[in-house]
Figure 1 (tube, rainbow, N blue to C red):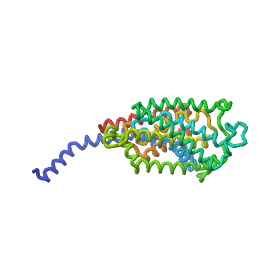
Figure 2 (spheres, rainbow, N blue to C red; figure 1 turned 60 degrees about the vertical axis):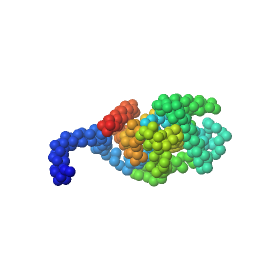
Figure 3 (cartoon, rainbow, N blue to C red; figure 1 turned 45 degrees about the vertical axis):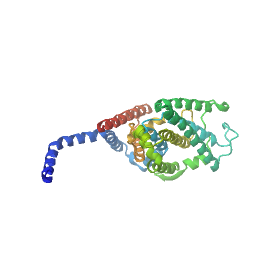
Figure 4 (cartoon, helix red, strand yellow; figure 1 turned 90 degrees about the horizontal axis):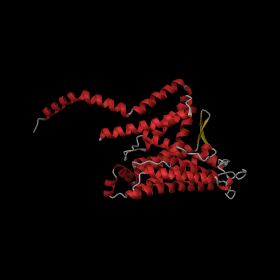
Length: 360
């Protein structure tokens, strides 16, 4: 048996030989893996210098409000990405459920009310509306999950199909009763106050009630992901579906339920969007899934599968909204925002794949 002292000395000598190279590789890998965060930090510092109001309490209130509005969809689509998939129908589902929410909660005395037979908006009816839009979102998610799990279709194809179908339903819905595509407005005070009412103010900027709802939803999703058998099964299927199946995990139902839960989150996002926009149009929710996907990837939810945290999704949403708030304050146009958004998604996915290949 080798002398422990000699073995320790040999190990130390080997470390001395390899350490400079390993140290250099470690530094390079760390910079590349966190390049997006580093660039974003530099950009935030630059914005704070150019626009001092960027760090004001009013700006913070605006950021919190936007994060609360965009977080539900990211929480839903995050589970689909954990399963190595995605969901292109998310934005249209949000648009449909926002339209339904608006129609259900229109005031009685507006001249162009969509359905005159709808009851007067009240708190009980508001809860009914919430349950209806959650059910609509969950149903579309169930369809997505069924076709992905049953026929082994790629989620890109399935959700692209349901995206088109859902948009067709939206256009049909907006043309009912001779509405002719007119936006749904005239939302009741019960709806606006219960969801969008001010909880408190920061520098005279109101923070709405749905921020509290977003906190509750986030806590619920964290519990589902981390403390339930379903959550463990989701990560197992995302890591290796065949191994999970051999281990006794019901891959079919896990996939279906992940997409169903995601759809319910989109439905909730639509419920909030109705208040946030104040007037729902046929184009509401268009491309909203892009923001959600970008936030998830920035937050470390890997398209490789089986990797992701709720805290990472929150961080991703915060970073993304922070960037867009900064760009708006710097006077960047909407067309440029789309270019930057696409570049962020591309870079985040490329860095994510690089991490996977390095580990492999």
